[in-house]
Image (cartoon, rainbow, N blue to C red; front, side, top):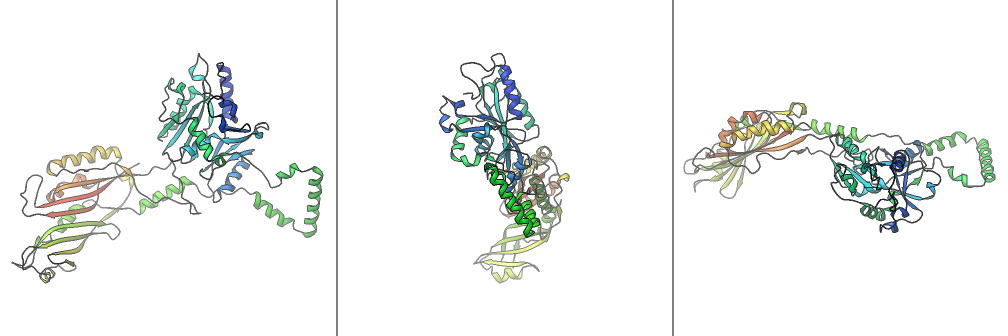
Length: 499
């Protein structure tokens, strides 16, 4: 189905070029008769139409409704469209004949249809069959949307031959692009459709949320409706108002009220800047453990006794758990023990405690020490860290070289993911939508499991990892070998990558 083509004949190349040029500079309208025979014509009344070729602008303000109208007035548009779900406003200068139709924005419908998609979504729909001698002359509608917004310089009608370059221009900005559509002519030109969304899906969204996509008149001042009154009444009313204001000296007050009603809202916040500020704040609040923090911790833990208490009333070490507290700059540790001899008592365990260590008991044969060691920290400075590619080469190689003396770990190195940070908000409390111009740094988890002695040979890995926790298990019955020891450790840390 091609809405701009007469199915009884081919569209000539001259006609294609004429409409394509018009589509870039003027609004194109699809009416019910364009969809005759498709099964979709019943969705549009005779006085309805789908508009393509609007100009789209971002709006960032406290009052989105006022800002949308103000943007349309500034652009000297006759009509505009703004959905409460969109962060852009579309404007159009309609001809008098076109303004008689009740028009709906096709780009707004598409943006709502793919509102939950990540990255940039591109819609490519074929409008004409084109010339038999030139497959690329077929007309298509091209539109791009991201984060519930229509991208500027899209929502255009153009020849199919230009689509591939338009998609490549979007992809060149390192933005993931997903192409939607159902145009077979594009595949002949090397343009592949990632997923099929066609007229049926667009009409479904249109039917469910008609009011969101309607083009509304852009009234430039409160007196615009007076044009429909007879001129005699208008002049009589104006004269009466002038006389009244002159006598009451309310002219300055009226001017202030009029200026307030017709003023263009000031754009006070930019989403990109808000995201960049939030990222800088998140990084300034992130503290990493300093290099050699793990080896120093292992040295300090050597003061923890494997057995405490008097002969015949002994307690045996089972495990030690240490977690990094970068705010308080210390390792918070807990050593768990179990009674080894029947004569072991809580009083004997308490007497063996070192100065400053807290003691906890679990009836009747379990007890623990809680203590801490100093921890050196460093700020997160991204330029000092490796890229994701460098980590996958150098950091992964350091891990692989340790594997012969480690136990098998199901997740020695996790996949990279963007760092977690709080979503910024506008001054009115509304969350700022994600923007493609701000890329978040990446982080991944490192896990090493093996004998505690392995910690002394992890220097190459240590300088690039912020260690977060260390767990030591003690089993004196274990026979030491290449990957096992009476003292085994599980250490977990994080690596950060430049975006």
